[in-house]
Length: 196
Image (cartoon, rainbow, N blue to C red):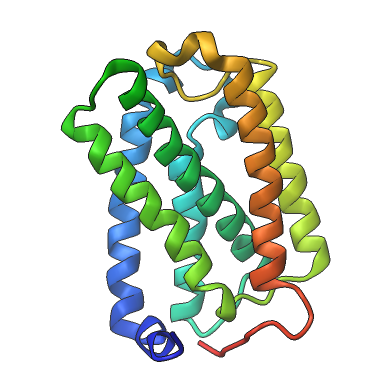
């Protein structure tokens, strides 16, 4: 697996990933457009989960290209990329079970969101996260769950509405797992570290 890291650190690969993630971020905000129009202003930062996660990763990539680390952005990126990447995969698979199939956009969302989760973890050796970055990220992430499942600002999948309590419970534990993943790959003592 270590053979992969020189490729990931290559400036051309970083630029390519930045372009792909910028495009995905823009599409993600567009996808949320109708929901954002109906969202109270105070909740706007917490509704477009996946595009905000990919925006954090775009910022981390910009820092890498400048030869820098922005640890709070890196912490937000790894936790939210993993969380919302896996969340969207599971929700789209759930939609497939409930409806008996998916349209092509559902398969595209499964692929793109799984890639989000993977890229967030793959770049962990390059992150320089400290405890306080992870604590702030944990507060952001769990606060976002409250906004989603107490104030009902989560992404709308109409066909899954009757499962909201179960989805909220799953999402909370996915948040905890995502924070744990970030600790394991990007913070724990003696973790695998590389320079970009």
